[in-house]
Image (cartoon, rainbow, N blue to C red; front, side, top):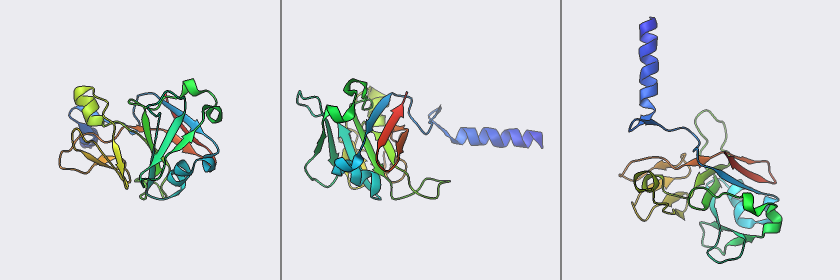
Length: 186
């Protein structure tokens, strides 16, 4: 009986492995971002309260120190001024400078309702294989990498939905209390 239990545990652990690596729920890369009140930023408000809605939080290419928030509906981006953010220098927007924040339309296994989720805006497969921080393009509940052509389902924990397979999106711990959103990892 004890031997059967040990074999079962080993099988469970082996089933979690992907190419010899065990992928945890949250990435070990640093990410920090907080904003309140979310209602002051329409794109972020929709992403945190609307099922299946997501937005990309990044820094624009211009030299102004501000944060840009874009949704996947093609509306004009919202800009958050540094004074609203407090300490601008402590913001870390993932590996490539962007985060995808939203409320999946599906709840996770073991949860009774969806919760706000945050993914890195970088393709994990391009980063893992080539250390290339290729930004993802947001499209109605999916994120796509134009380099490797993988598509990720944001409503299903960032799994790869294209035939290429590979790692799921890097994910960060996030909290949303109804008025503020807080991403904190490391």
